[in-house]
Image (cartoon, rainbow, N blue to C red; front, side):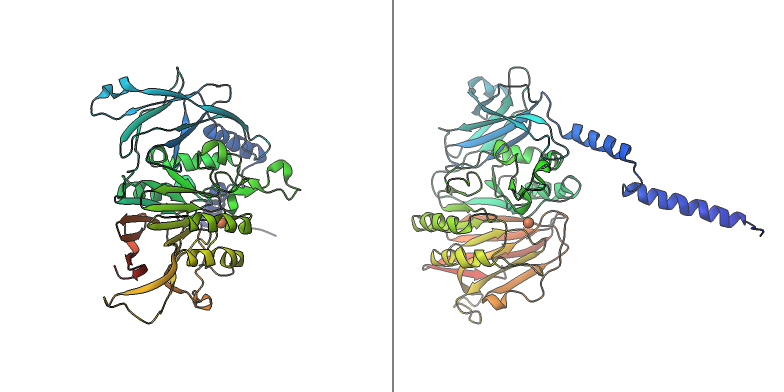
Length: 454
Ligand SMILES: [Fe+2]
């Protein structure tokens, strides 16, 4: 048989082969095991700590008007670290009045817990006795290696306007695509009092490279706006060496890298807690474990709460936004308490779509102002900031007696919420800065009046 190969056909075959090779190369599928190992080693080296402090982050404490939590990490042989802090001044000599406070150091070895694991030193300082409503500058490190001076402001100790940012799951493509969300959020509200991360900050709980992406994406924003973070299901995973067991455990990095309050139930330290501002109590719940136990604690914390505004945050939604997902236990144990004690806002994640709504006293009746309706319990929000997207459940929340007012899919979002006296304003933005959703709640004669068209 004679095969005649036409020159064009030959050229076509070469191009086809090259095209397939390039696409496969981009998708990693043609990498040899050796090449994959080399790539993993480069990423691991990128994520590893060195002499200079990195992952510098502020955590909100129970009383942010007088205290702050500061954490960072370095290479593992470094055993001493401290924070230097002073009231920030206009000139460069403000540091002359600095105070030094030595850190508690913890050694963390994540080798064997994830493929990219290694050893690190983590440092933690809780600074107390600060002046309210004051701009401080601080740096972290040791005698040889120090960070730059960062600035943060303590909250007021008297009732005054307050604002904060909130995001749902960062989780995937954190450095490549979540970075633009957190950076735009900072541009919209650079003076936000704190930043809520409602779970699934990363995809693999113990992955050093994913946490490094999270810190690289947020960079100095983490060092200057205190975090209020709760773990999602992706922060609870088995370690590599325990693949066969049932032991999902909290991300090994969580407690070493945050200084969140330990005022919640025992065994849930830094995952279930509350933070008080003069006119606002933020209650962070861990929706992964011990739901009934937390309900008992939540009842006590809500019953004794005298703040005008109450916001709860946790990962799994009370009313799901996406198809095929439901969290009945939260509706059974937490929602009745939210209703009984008139929680104002529930900030959630997990569903990789956007949904916002509430239960109304009378869904068909407008208030005397002609634009508001009375809500019973919180306004519920599900939001996503990272790049993984699911489909919205078209059915809405009617079967639960709730009305979903706004839904979205295939959209990355962050939220800016501000409170001034009896008025709460909520705005949800895309990473391009487009306003996607907004509402306001007015406290009037013991009722929450929700205006969906603000
Ligand atoms: Fe999740």
